[in-house]
Image (cartoon, rainbow, N blue to C red; front, side, top):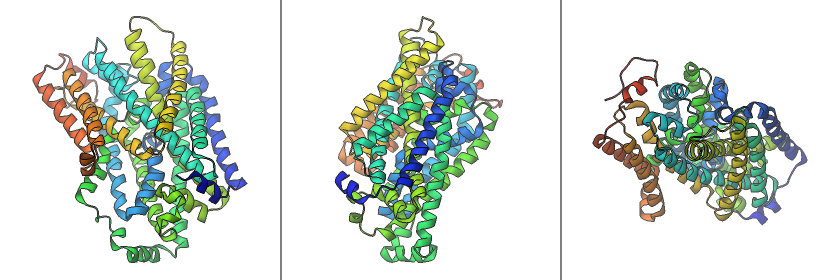
Length: 504
């Protein structure tokens, strides 16, 4: 992004800035409100004491996975390629509906019965990880990709603030990090979930109002589509995508079952029977937000036919520019807030997961496994860890500030490939072994790195696709050659209410 261009072309309106600041103050107030509850113990800090209601779980589960990629990346993608960008949101929408309806309840039931508050907790209980090696490996994988992910969100926040209010990108990064740090460190999981719910509302408003107004100003649906069709018939054809690109787009959904900041939402719900209700609410949100992002991008082509008309010739600046063109200052402030909502609803969740990997899975369960640590002391350590992780993410963001959306997709792929196949099999196949989990973790992680860093391979298909399936093959193959835990069958029954047997 050319920050000088941004500063000279964006007119900062007092009303827009005021509405945005009011939104930020609301987030900080929620953090303060949640602080007493989150201070009770580590379970309250990381999973809300397993007392979250269905509406909060529904919205926080979907928006924590969307990030800046949806509002800036997908809108920019739709601006560049048109209706075929719809496939980029279809995969995760379908995947998360399936997770809500099937996977989520089993994970929730098992985690309560075995006092699991992190994903490594679940694996340790499922496979009798007495020496802590599996837990430690999982913690390293999660921490590695989560810090990368958080860094990308901070950079996305800086980008949005530069495009929205004319600040330098790095100033925006620091402001984003400070706000997320404030309410996450103080309020823990409750603050994160409540703010995610509010941020889901902001995102929905922005992604519904802006395309409706932009299309109406262009003469309505038919004239806008006719103009886009005249520009390029393929632009309005969702099936104009090459097969390899289609596979990569739809395959984005494979990352959902491996991203702990989504999965921990399922573990936090108070009544697991309400997950089915949450599934349909969350899916409705995913559908509307995804369609809205694509329509914003397509409508933007009418108003900015040449990419050089966008700030810095960057398609990721389309959303705030289109909003400034069509909305009054207060609504424009809300749209900029919706960008931050997408960013912060992901970054805060990932910070908690990364902190839990260090405090719960490394310090409490490995380093101090034979000692009793006071609950409130663990909360203090968790808050300090959140602050330290923010510093690390800022350093990484400074080193790689131009790679924000590559970092998002890379981290999403790494977590999905390493944890996706193993977590699904751990819930549904009693033949899965500890050695098989190790094989899947290592294979998924290594293939993600190698594929993404090899230009010829990276040009073929998104790294998540081969990494996920090779990780799955490695997990199954090694499990078939090794012996599952003797209590596997009884543990599987603990995951579900139904009496159907687990897969042999």
